[in-house]
Image 1 (cartoon, rainbow, N blue to C red):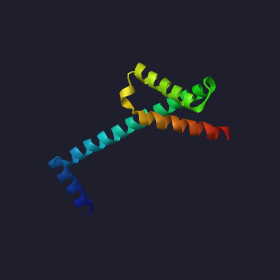
Image 2: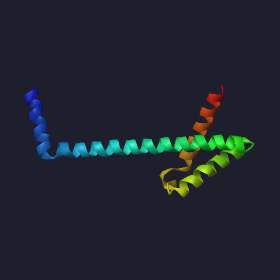
Image 3: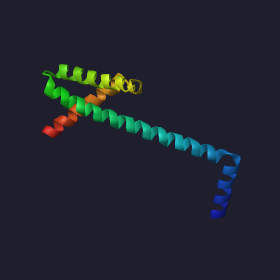
Image 4: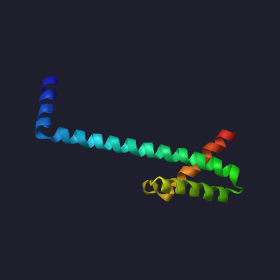
Length: 105
Protein backbone atom coordinates (compact mmCIF):
# COMPACT_ATOMS: atom_id res chain seq x y z
CA UNK A 1 0.00 0.00 0.00
CA UNK A 2 2.78 2.44 0.94
CA UNK A 3 4.68 1.65 -2.26
CA UNK A 4 1.58 2.39 -4.32
CA UNK A 5 1.14 5.73 -2.54
CA UNK A 6 4.77 6.67 -3.14
CA UNK A 7 4.52 5.64 -6.80
CA UNK A 8 1.32 7.68 -7.15
CA UNK A 9 2.96 10.75 -5.52
CA UNK A 10 5.99 10.42 -7.82
CA UNK A 11 3.72 10.21 -10.86
CA UNK A 12 1.85 13.34 -9.76
CA UNK A 13 5.14 15.16 -9.18
CA UNK A 14 6.57 14.18 -12.57
CA UNK A 15 3.37 15.15 -14.37
CA UNK A 16 3.53 18.63 -12.85
CA UNK A 17 0.21 18.33 -11.03
CA UNK A 18 1.62 18.09 -7.51
CA UNK A 19 3.96 21.12 -7.82
CA UNK A 20 1.05 23.14 -9.22
CA UNK A 21 -1.17 22.11 -6.31
CA UNK A 22 1.56 23.01 -3.83
CA UNK A 23 2.02 26.45 -5.41
CA UNK A 24 -1.76 27.04 -5.27
CA UNK A 25 -1.91 25.92 -1.64
CA UNK A 26 0.97 28.21 -0.65
CA UNK A 27 -0.67 31.13 -2.48
CA UNK A 28 -4.00 30.49 -0.76
CA UNK A 29 -2.40 30.23 2.68
CA UNK A 30 -0.36 33.38 2.11
CA UNK A 31 -3.40 35.37 0.98
CA UNK A 32 -5.40 34.17 3.97
CA UNK A 33 -2.64 35.13 6.40
CA UNK A 34 -2.28 38.59 4.81
CA UNK A 35 -6.04 39.15 4.92
CA UNK A 36 -6.18 38.14 8.60
CA UNK A 37 -3.22 40.39 9.41
CA UNK A 38 -4.92 43.38 7.71
CA UNK A 39 -8.20 42.65 9.47
CA UNK A 40 -6.44 42.49 12.84
CA UNK A 41 -4.79 45.84 12.14
CA UNK A 42 -8.17 47.37 11.20
CA UNK A 43 -9.80 46.05 14.38
CA UNK A 44 -6.99 47.45 16.50
CA UNK A 45 -7.33 50.82 14.79
CA UNK A 46 -11.11 50.73 15.29
CA UNK A 47 -10.65 50.09 19.02
CA UNK A 48 -8.42 53.14 19.38
CA UNK A 49 -10.77 55.29 17.29
CA UNK A 50 -13.84 54.27 19.30
CA UNK A 51 -12.10 54.94 22.62
CA UNK A 52 -10.93 58.33 21.38
CA UNK A 53 -14.38 59.28 20.07
CA UNK A 54 -16.00 58.12 23.31
CA UNK A 55 -14.02 60.56 25.44
CA UNK A 56 -13.88 63.38 22.90
CA UNK A 57 -17.45 63.66 21.57
CA UNK A 58 -21.02 63.47 22.86
CA UNK A 59 -23.72 61.47 21.11
CA UNK A 60 -23.50 58.08 19.49
CA UNK A 61 -23.80 59.21 15.87
CA UNK A 62 -21.22 61.96 16.31
CA UNK A 63 -18.86 59.51 17.97
CA UNK A 64 -19.33 56.96 15.21
CA UNK A 65 -18.86 59.48 12.40
CA UNK A 66 -15.71 60.83 14.06
CA UNK A 67 -14.35 57.31 14.54
CA UNK A 68 -15.00 56.58 10.84
CA UNK A 69 -13.29 59.85 9.89
CA UNK A 70 -10.29 59.07 12.09
CA UNK A 71 -9.87 55.61 10.56
CA UNK A 72 -10.39 56.87 7.01
CA UNK A 73 -7.93 59.74 7.47
CA UNK A 74 -5.32 57.39 8.89
CA UNK A 75 -5.77 54.84 6.09
CA UNK A 76 -5.46 57.60 3.49
CA UNK A 77 -2.32 58.92 5.20
CA UNK A 78 -0.61 55.53 5.09
CA UNK A 79 -1.94 54.80 1.59
CA UNK A 80 -3.97 51.77 2.73
CA UNK A 81 -7.50 53.07 2.14
CA UNK A 82 -7.88 50.86 -0.93
CA UNK A 83 -7.55 47.74 1.23
CA UNK A 84 -10.86 48.21 3.09
CA UNK A 85 -14.45 48.89 2.12
CA UNK A 86 -16.72 51.30 3.96
CA UNK A 87 -18.67 48.28 5.17
CA UNK A 88 -15.55 46.67 6.66
CA UNK A 89 -14.70 49.90 8.49
CA UNK A 90 -18.27 50.20 9.78
CA UNK A 91 -18.26 46.58 10.96
CA UNK A 92 -14.90 47.09 12.68
CA UNK A 93 -16.30 50.09 14.56
CA UNK A 94 -19.41 48.14 15.59
CA UNK A 95 -17.16 45.31 16.80
CA UNK A 96 -15.05 47.77 18.82
CA UNK A 97 -18.17 49.35 20.36
CA UNK A 98 -19.49 45.93 21.40
CA UNK A 99 -16.10 44.99 22.83
CA UNK A 100 -16.00 48.23 24.81
CA UNK A 101 -19.55 47.67 26.14
CA UNK A 102 -18.64 44.15 27.27
CA UNK A 103 -15.58 45.46 29.07
CA UNK A 104 -17.73 47.98 30.96
CA UNK A 105 -20.06 45.29 32.32
